[in-house]
Image 1: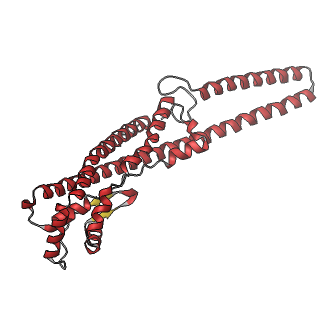
Image 2: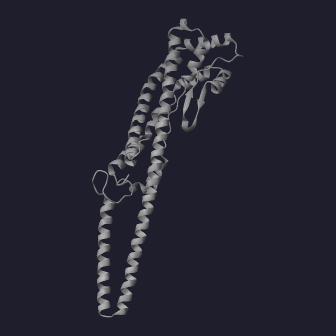
Image 3: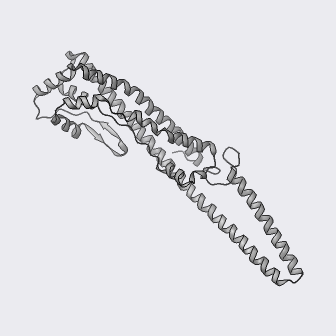
Length: 290
């Protein structure tokens, strides 16, 4: 991690950061000041000018005090940078998990949409009306993964983003965390969602929410394959399944939504790849192999 976070020396790619150059110049100046003070003390002692000796020692103490304070500040920055680094890695791990889970969820939703359209195109293949109702309902699920960016936002807001001396890494982190606008696409709610939920009886919907769907932390969702409720009449399910597969306007909306899922899956796949690449780079800098 040396040369990337708060180490004011040579950078990871062999370049010196501006803070490192400034500190080098400042330390050189301080060294010259100390040499000058010691020279004056030596001269005052030879001249037995004890008042001048006392004054120079006071000045020397002030200079050393500034140096000690500066060292303590740099040490505090280094410690803070180490903590930020670990937090950024943890955030990236969580983003990788969330994007992967969201990709899996949206793939399931798209598959259910294709299944529902298959029933509409080939009603003679239907053997269980519950499978039709379940496919039509869960094909309306939506919602993307919420990116964790709290550490990055804190570093930018407090000015501590400067602790990253590696300008290339800083640029890649900025680019990575600027992709939040993709949520405008991944979080969109289709017209199909409102239409199909307006057609399915609320008793069926309640059952599906409890038994056939799950929502975990970080907006992670999953659809669950479940059996039909025991207390619902088969004739009611048959009638509902027929209404769904015969509703051409509904199927047009579903067809559009299934098509859009392809783009959403591509976005999630890209998010997974960029997160993994960013995480691998951070791990390499830290020198671990998690």
